[in-house]
Image (cartoon, rainbow, N blue to C red; front, side, top):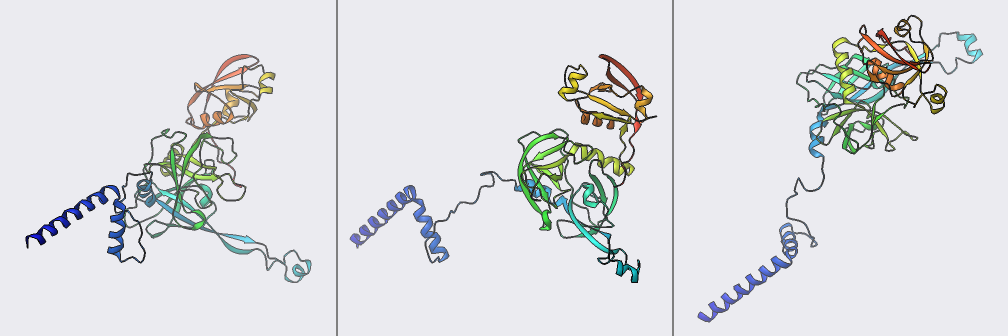
Length: 385
């Protein structure tokens, strides 16, 4: 009997020693066989038994989770009239005249928007809702609402919608102005091609993009996060899920994303949004001049030390500039003490001034620097196309 116990003790000791060696040197052997035995697998596979570490690697799941509920889908429709296909046929017109004139049809569109307040204000692009007579908003949880346009600003391509919801809506968090840097990670959220809520990632490729011919007032964030048709009006957020821009346009030769997208920065979007909600429109300063960029050739011709500033190419009669004494050929160097870098900068500086307030203009005329004083006017609404 003692001998049997001795053999049993030796066997247990050897087994424990072997298990210790295998566990130390080849732990995957134990994991593989244990998993196969536990799951009844047909083949032996290797699979980790360690839970995934949420902090391991790079993930923007928390940022997306924070921002996605506040991004909505916008569906628009409008009635358009198209001519009857036989209206150009003289024989058809002879018998039927204009009884079969333009035929009304419904035209639909889609885009995205960002919920900025719990009581139903939504920020989006003007071109998303332009001309629409019916607007429907679908939230991320599947609810649908009829929306109306509170106001729009075609010159910055922004618009504000209003919906009435029974329960409070999840809202986006705005970033601090000028907090974005080139190289920062950003996420674009929207409804590209109508496939549903989509999150794409990239970086900030450039800041302050202008002279693109997209809007009158341009100060775009450029990003390589994929932006496609349907993303317009959606959110561009940082790695914390905070709103830094409104997705607006892409550069594309195919209609799809080519890694060059543009978003309106949150500072401009917020200013326009607050004016629209408060007044129904946006008020900007205006002096009534036509300006021209200063090329190296023009700088030499006007005997200027560089290309900074803007040449006054024309002055509207009776405008604030005309009353201040500004004439064609003047070079505008500063507005209200702020230097004019180029024509776009001049437009932005004057637009930011309050109509009715006095302002000083630094001018170079005939090789001499002079200062003129004037009263800022109110920028007229752009003509309807």
